[in-house]
Length: 337
Image (cartoon, rainbow, N blue to C red):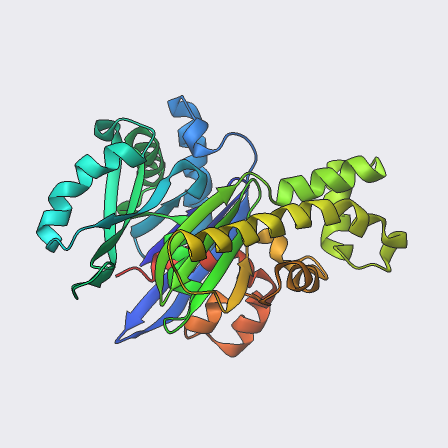
């Protein structure tokens, strides 16, 4: 299966082959792009040239599969958990459309809606009921992503949100963890309980904000700022700590949102405390970011490696190691049955 993760600045693709319960890597590739994101595209010409980028990437990466699972950005989807009385699966499926009207800010007939049963408690008592994860996205946006992938000569078989895919590739199935995917234009947070996405939030603060902070603070071009950010990150001894000084406030902002998300999950959703924070995405490789998050968030922090879940040639694994945080969503998409 082919997974296609179309980010705000890069396209990542991964082809996996399934054998029994395990997956092996067939091919992978990443390419940067500039210009409009798919959801903002309005004319055929723009979509055609974007489809050509995907087509070229597939050729260069030697992709064999034509069937693709693709993601839409978390910021364009609406994810909520809803509590139902103890209903059957079919009763919940019937009720979900009416319930969705209360939870999503767009008309139900303009949305694509999916749901997953997270927890069922049939014993008598105050906690009796079913907890359901509701995911909805504007039909017009989903159709644009599907069309672009079709124009690239591929057959879309499913569309998911980034965090559902990331839960599959990075979250352990026996614990509760917090995922933070630091992309270009947004940081996506998820609490995953035993492999199931139970809470999500998207923040409009991420890699671009880090770069902007460095650029403004040091009066340098965004291109230079990007290089400095990647090279020095939050290391206090580099450039007299100027890069760290510029980045600190943004990291604190993200850390505060992480703490708020955990607090909401514990108090409102009555969930379990996450045992670790797993970070991924383009900005997760910044020097000293793990140490900074550990201090501010107060839990173990790890950089997610989605390649650890799949069989891969050791020499290739070494070559791809520095790119691993970029591939979490694409690998999760390709792992979908």
